[in-house]
Length: 180
Length: 232
Image 1 (cartoon, each protein chain N blue to C red):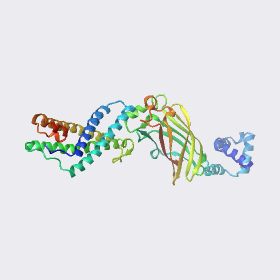
Image 2: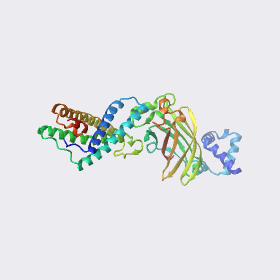
Image 3: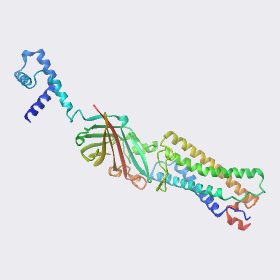
């Protein structure tokens, strides 16, 4: 298959994937910790990763608008194409929505987000306890939706690679293509 | 000088003793002791008639030292907030309960005095878990040291409407000198005092043990005060 994503798209995809794989378990782990300097540090790292994902998401969408992705193979039934497109669309929305909800939550809880402790992000909402608690629920909910969507995304990739063996995964992992 | 002294003594006596004196004079004029007669004689000599008894306190009230002072705190328009830095992020908090005994005459701010007592358990960090944490032993230890206090010492002018106060800050049983700039803004019926000064939390042992790591929570905390004081 000559059809594959551009090197930039591949890099952005895997960079964002890695950061999500770091930020998600970190978020699950840290929120239950008793208050300590370590907890404050982890929260900051989590926020820095989230802002990084947001920035990469902006680049990725700009790239996506200016570079057509390879089309889905015709061997895929219509419902699979629809499912694939839906999952991709949701993932694009979530890589914005999840960091954004975290950023707003932080502002509502009265703690500005400062990327790498250097670059302050504006507080888009004022300090407000009720809003902060609401945004916490939103952030959590979006994350568990994202978990489901990512599992579907990975499941589909494995199905294509190991069951259908149609080379779809090689479009995003080029070295896999050399063996087929 | 001599006259003033006499007046001062006279006023003092009158302010506190004229009522019983009058009562005694009216009820038992015949049993006035000699000293009282002498007293009355001098009083009549200096201030004929009884009106002076009212006039003198009024005169006193007009002197800057007493009546022009702003002494009544308006708690709803006053606040004590602080900004600490956590992982490089400035985070604001406040103290909900404090008392401030302030006496400032805008004409002579250098003679002003202030005593601020802060109920440390009334801290609002914006996070319930942090509120509980900072009440604990490593931070304020509010069980043993429920209040922090500031007592003003000298005040000097540093510019237009700008002043600097020296005073003693006591937190967690430790008293240290602090210096804070402040401004005075007078309106028709209130005087607004605003200022901010840095305080090193570790100087007072606030946030000891694991929390003494200043990379996470900075040593320097900025305390901001805003007091609205009215006349009596």
